[in-house]
Length: 491
Ligand code: NAD
Image (tube, rainbow, N blue to C red; front, top):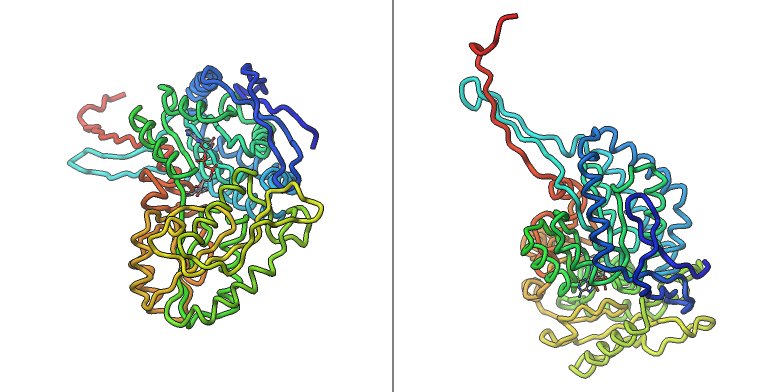
């Protein structure tokens, strides 16, 4: 990929930002500069909001059956460009090609589900709520919607929102992560190729200035955000203060209970993949393994062995199982947190620091790292590391494990590994997390279910994906009507 200067997409045209400010997009495995992304201004966001509003006035009246035809076309284009998009994700983000393919598959599934919008946005009707009076509810689009995405899934996350918003008759302004903007640049090119009318999809690249401009803009009626908890809280409060609908997904620190009766091979493989897949940069990564009873004796050696075996390197190489972390600054931050854990009393089981990958010496690599005896009240137990680090704790009972989970600030995911159905059922009932895995390590909801974070992992009411997304991107209108027979004129 040559070093290109990315543009914004406003009113169906590719437009160079006028700011002259850029951020370099770097391949995290090779340190090669892939592109420069503009740090656009609030004035450029305003331009996008204005055209999106103008486009909305027409788009809302395009029949839903016609609106979804663009999604069918987009689905074909995504399939045709599947390999290129997956390679792009690996190059700018660092995850393995197989992980990138999995990500794009999940993005496409959201397009497929949104093709069902004619059914998903159907209203309700009750005849005769009083003599001769009927009442019904219709769903109408809300207007211009803002979509703000994080770095860790450059292709998938914006698709928790875009296809539903557009199919329901809204227009969108997308602000991709400036760390990984090339994938969305290519995806918006495909949306353009799908024939969507000018102004329905717009993209403005940049940083926090664009996010705040989205939250403040009177013509933008909603904000869909995914990112870290402090920024999610900021987005939720600032957007709400401006009267917008906001759905803001935040960070995570996912606990996984391991019982001694769990299958050793399956559990070890799944847990290692959950903790170290995507180099731990996944909001559904297993962050803390809570060993119940004798489980530690069985699983700690198995986990150590599997973590040490994981092949780390450039994600485009087929044998590689784990790529680098996103930036050199993140590598320093993550290694600092590992040291903090050790300083707090945790024991180093597998140390992934000081990783050097031959041929990729400039990459931001950290090998899988496992700490045991992590103190429950320490900073490392509570902080989202967002890197390839698994902490291990020990408890005597399932109840104590659930208590640790429920005392955590986040609620994105909780998992349990056991062969005991009754314990699994208790866990499912009592765990205070919105996505539950039972003998599953990454409980990522399919596109037809909501991505259901709780507590500090989510601010709002309606989540991304499926019916929740359609509800978020529509407002209900109630009509009560009366047509007395006596009023009917004779012809
Ligand atoms: P981030 O919060 O740094 O950035 C997210 C978006 O907000 C980006 O587009 C960024 O440009 C913008 N932004 C950053 N700082 C801002 C500020 N001060 N004001 C306004 N906007 C700002 O998140 P990230 O590092 O890109 O992504 C990783 C985080 O996202 C992790 O915490 C992870 O758990 C979380 N995440 C959550 C989910 C979920 O479903 N809950 C899914 C994926 C990622």
